[in-house]
Each structure stands twice: as C-alpha cells, then as structure tokens.
Image 1 (tube, helix red, strand yellow):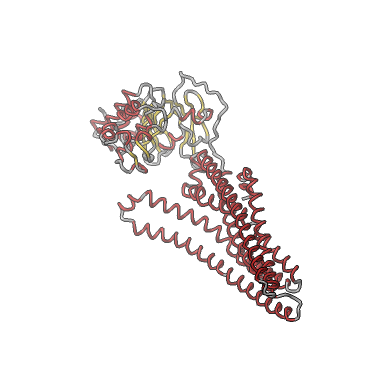
Image 2: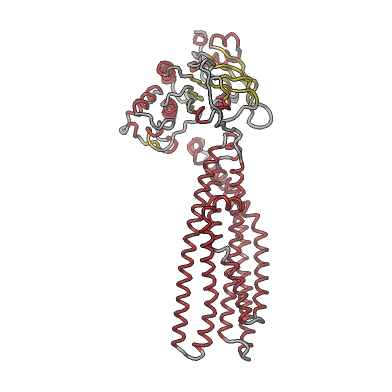
Length: 577
C-alpha cells in the first residue's frame, strides 16, 4: 500500500500535509472545550455569574465554529486527494491491463480484473481519505486527553491509563481475529463477480436450457459463502463496541466515585470531574476510530496487494518500438517457419507448423474442434508469442513490428461477434476514425450487410445496444466483417465468421471479397468445406499439427483427413466437382 501511496500521492503533498494539520487543529480545540466547560461549572455556576456563563458559552460556540471550518477544509483536501489518487490509479490500471497479452488476461481472469479496477481501487480511495482525516487526529486525541487528565489530576489519570490499555487489548484481540476474514472477503467478491458475469452474459443460454434454478442455486452458494464470512467478521466486530463502552463507562464510574470523594475534601473541583469524564469519552471515541481505521487499512492493504499484482504483471508479448521496419515486397505475405506454441508448460498446442501465404491469396483453415485453428491465427497479430520458430510478415519477423504498425495492416473478425454500444457508423470507424460514409457503405455491401442496415429508418445512425443484441447472430457477424473491411487491411482474418450465415449469403460474401478486395490476403477459418474449398491454399490442422496443405484437389489426393471431412459434409459429386 505504501508503494501505491508514494506513486499516486506525490501530486497531493500539499493536501496530505495541510489536511491533517487542519484536523489536528480541530482536535486541539476539542481538547480545550472540556476546560471551558469546567470553568463554566467552577466559576459561572458556582458563583451564579450569568454573564460569565454566557461569555464562556460564546467561547465554546466560537471554538465549535472554528473547529467546523477547519474540519471542512480537511474534508475538502481529503476528497481532492483521495478522488484524484483513485482516478489516476484506475486510469493507469486500465491502461496497464490493456497492455497485457491474452496470456496474462487469461491467467488473472476478467471478473477479477473488474473487481480490482472497481472495488479494490475504491478501498484505496477510502484509505487515503481516512488517512488524511483521522489517522493523525485519533491518536492525538488519545494522547492529548491523557495529558490533559494528568494536568487536571495526576491520581485520577491512572484510571485513564488503565482503561486505555484495556481498550487497546480489546482492539488487538478483535482485530487479530477479524483481519484474515477481511482478506478472504476480497477473494470471495471475485467469485461473486465471476458467477454474476457468466449469468448475465449467458442469460439467453441459461433460459434456453431452463437452468435458472440451478444457476440461482449456484449463485446462492457463493453469495451465502460471502455472507457467512461477512457475518463471522461482523460478529467479531460486534464485540468491539460493547466491550469498549463497558470499559469506558466503568472508568467514568471510577472517575466520578473517586472524584466526588476528592471534591468533598477540596482536592478537586466539580468542573474538573466533568472535564475528566469528557476526556474519557473522547478517548473512547478515538479508540473506536482507531479500530475502524485498522479494519479500513486492512482491507486497503489486501486491495493494494491485488492491484500491485496487476501492475507487476508484465506482458509476455514485448513490443519492439525502436526497429525500423523494411518489408520485403517480394517475400511471402505471411510465413510460418517451424512454429511451436503452448499456452502453458506442457504439451504444445501447435507443433512444427510451416507454410507460406502469398500476397492476395485466399487461404482456408479447416480441422476438427480443438485442432488449433484459432490459436494459429492469433499468433499472426501477436496476441501470443511463439515458443519456438518464427512468423514472418512481409519477410520481417512479427516480433520486430510495433503493435500498431502490425495490427493496422490486419483486419480481424473473431469467433464471437462483438459490437459496442453506439451507432452502426461508430462501430464501423473502429479501425479508421476518418472513414467516410462511402467507405462504410462499400464495406457493408461486401459483407452483405448494406441492405438490412439501410432498411432501418436511421440507417448508419441506427443504435447498437450493448453486445449488438438488437441484431440477429448472422447480422452481427456481417457487421463485424464489415468493420474489419472498412479500412481495407492488407490481411483479413475471418475466424469461423460465417458460421451464422446461410449458404447463399456465405457464397455471396466470399464472391464479393474476391472481386472487391484487390490484393487483400484473406484467411478464412471454417468448419464448412464449401466455404474454403475454392481457396488458393488450404491448411488442414489435426491435434495441433499440420496434417496437409495445398488446394482442394491436391488435398483430396494427399490428405485422408481432409477427404474425410469433405465427404462427411458434401455429396461425392460436389467434392470432386
């Protein structure tokens, strides 16, 4: 937590110095009030001097007003520093998350990252605010009240020290037992976030399979687990107030008991007894604040560890920003040279993959589920780095390209059709914000999406709801394809992006791509033989290996797996046509 404070509070040095000083000044005024009250009783009330009582009453009101103004200044500085610190931290955290590769994002998990960027940062914000407002004030009040008690009556001050020690022991016992639970709660919040996200994003699937009751039970179990832990720590914390109030009230009884005896023999004034009772109450309240600060800083410490874990996580895919790229126009557009890759230690997902793709070629990739098709294409834009071998783009290793330079040349349509809230036009401008309506309409036409977009009354200004749920699955796929085509990338990667299209639309789209995307290299991952059979090059994957490569006719003769796939989907006449 100290590491984060140093990094994000350096711009708020004035706030974290002046704020606590204002609160300290308020505490000093608060320590003076019991003395004023004692004088009112010992002088004003004892002598029935109404004028003195009114004057000293006015002094108390003035002290309260000045203290209020000082507290408001502190509150303002605490708010500025905590919100500013939290905003910068959240922005940096979001930026760092976006710099991580797919490998690190998969490792930490989306729900956990969401919890860290929201709940955990909020815990740090609260800690900063309380640090400025109370971290200095509460201990000062405890010490100050004890000093004032010694000044008033050194014998009765012993009661203060004994009660302070007893309250401290109660605080230590409760905190030592409850702190581990607060750390566990943060982890259990991740699980609640995970299940909530899965249920909300997969709501249609859950309803389709009538799994509402099972998912409700699953959520209840995780929620109840969080609730059980929170209740346990709540029960421990509930001991705090009764125990501390019991000790304090008992101390007040002793102060009044022994103080009254002293007053009877003239050793202490009645007003001083009232002052001592007030100081005892101040100690109690300050100690309770200290206890709450311990809880708050414990939560913040656990959150800080989780945030630091993200900041300390470095991307396994390192960007090269210094190399000047000199592409070779005579080299293959894409070349895999003996590439091996695995997501983690153990068996490779891809093994010894080698092939070349020439500029302007249409390439089909086919294979069984889990054969490595999506993994292979994710290596081209460097979403992951190869374990061995190399991938060349225009004769240059993809590791030598800056991310933006490489990915600007590649249009990708992932398996899951993802649209963002906004208008159709805004979605189409993701790759190139300066795209004109003519370019957008051309891309929509190629993607066979122009008709259904223009049928909408608002055309390109049609709103896309979150996730594109106001469009069908096939329409979302076509809009995603159009978005990738708008900027006319040199390489277009379609990862099983025709799965929701009917055969006629599939054929029309492939024809439009061939005719209207001059010199564009198109890579199509598909489960359909009909979609890729006319490709210039077909790659057949099986269990992470390259089972065959060539055109349709060549593979029918040389690759039994490809032949088997084709015959399982098409009539024999269509296969050999």
